[in-house]
Amino acid sequence: MFLPLSRQSPQSVTPDPHRKVHRGLARIPRTTKVAIGVLLGAMLLVLVDRCAVMYAEKRAERTLQHKLGLAAAPKVNIHGFPFLTQVLGKHLDGVDVTVPDVAAGRVTLARVRAEAADIRLFGDLPLPLDGAKAAQVDGDVLLAFDDLNRELGASQVTFRVLDRASVRAEGVLPVAGRQARIHAVAHIRRDGDRGVATSVSDMRLDVPGIATYRPGRPARLRLHPEAAERISRDKKKTRALLAVESVARQLGVAPEAAEQALWDDKQLRRITKRPGFTDRLTQANLVDLVADRPETLEQVGVDPVLARALVRLRAQDLTERVAFSFQLPKQVKGLRLRNITVEREGIRADLTGAGLAVGAGRHSGG
Image (cartoon, rainbow, N blue to C red; front, side):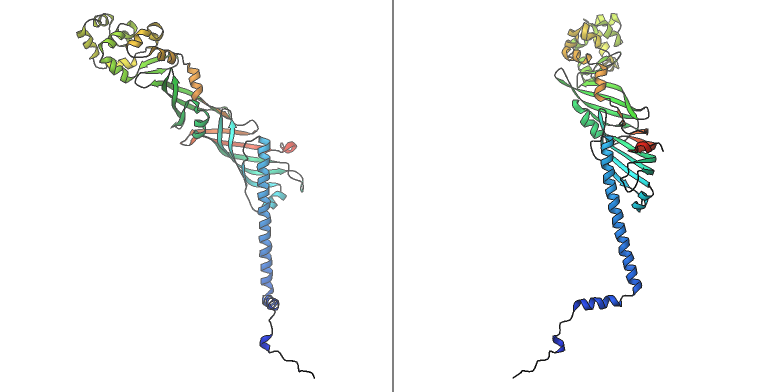
């Protein structure tokens, strides 16, 4: 006995989702399909182009670091779109290169930035290109005060802007068991086309409350205003200075008056109460007393050992503590410095050049 087959209801049939998708695509106009295809193709080309330029930038960074002997890899940014057509034409619109921490003698340049334009590429495609030559390069270099303070600050010297052409240097220098404050001004100038040099002026060492020493020819050892004020109020100390004829002459006191003041209090008061006497005390040069009359220094409250240590400091040695210079690395040829200025951040110089070749080999002159 056979049972009749049961008929499925139309509602129980499972729909085919793929058939619906095909039907949906079939309803899209052909022109729309072409537009979508073109758009997807363009997006793919853009993606490929951007991947190519990123690869080229990384390769250029490695090449520059190797050929220029850089401690840190530079940052390379290639201009223009599309990149691949520029490569095929062996010509780039422009390239930005930023190099951090470039060794330049005693100091390190915080940043060297260059913008190269109209760049010819050398090499035979599809092999890797073997060099490039830029028609024009512009940029700048920065010697940061933070780096100067770290690299030249062994004696706790710090640098800061004074004006557009000068740097103020200040710090601490141990002298004969005391801390002397060192002050100087470094004047910035260009050294040829590729370097920066400094000349130092206004060098002095202050021992607070005691004396100020200025090296050079002639060297000058002078009383600090506080010390001069103490001496002017102390008869014994004032007489110790007036007993030295060369010092009395610097104070504007005639030999007869100075000799009388050594025993006559009234004459001594006339001298010390004269307007400007304390100021003249701060202007008197006591260098000769260091060698000839050290006991006089001790009588007026200046340690002879300290004074001797101060005057033995050579101007050249002190200048080397605050002077600095730098040259562009020898590997970077064809670049020049100009328009050197001192700014709040540090010392900045414009960078310019033409016909700069990197890795171009035999093509560099063509």
